[in-house]
Image (cartoon, rainbow, N blue to C red; front, side, top):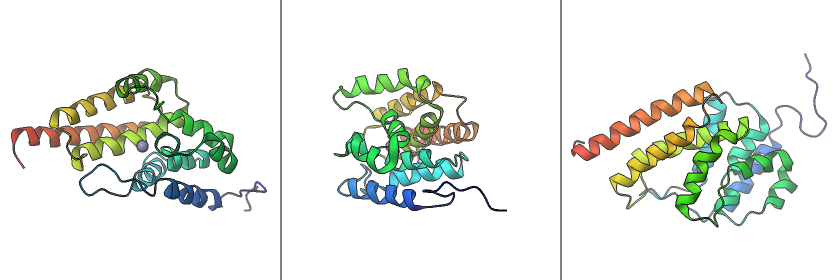
Length: 196
Ligand code: ZN
């Protein structure tokens, strides 16, 4: 049976998705993750979008585009206008919800994430969940170079507080977050024991 199709972006049309990938890859092209392998930064938003779709069952185009773009405003020279022109207001709104105000000191930004997480829109909560799953995993298994154990333990605690503020947004992603946190804590505990 034929589905009703929107004139510009029929269901299954990958145009905007590919444009978002292309745009984000270009914007993040000079950035690397802070792990010892210095992975290309773009791996991270791709992983976030992939978790949303495959684990969270979030099959919403704007949410997936926003996941691909979620760090462009915060971490690159991307302006809100660029996102709006290419991907529309809906996607821009989600990306802005995912963006910390870099003019604030780091501790203040982290505190604000805890305070704001209950007030995010449902889709932003889902993207935040996928983002924190990736980050918690990375902090444990491919940590930023030079981070002492105590800082990594603090990160896990902080991420948990952010996520505790938005529970109820997506049971599958929350379950994956909890599992990832258990594994991450085990990994850090084993490092503090000195066991392999
Ligand atoms: Zn991120």
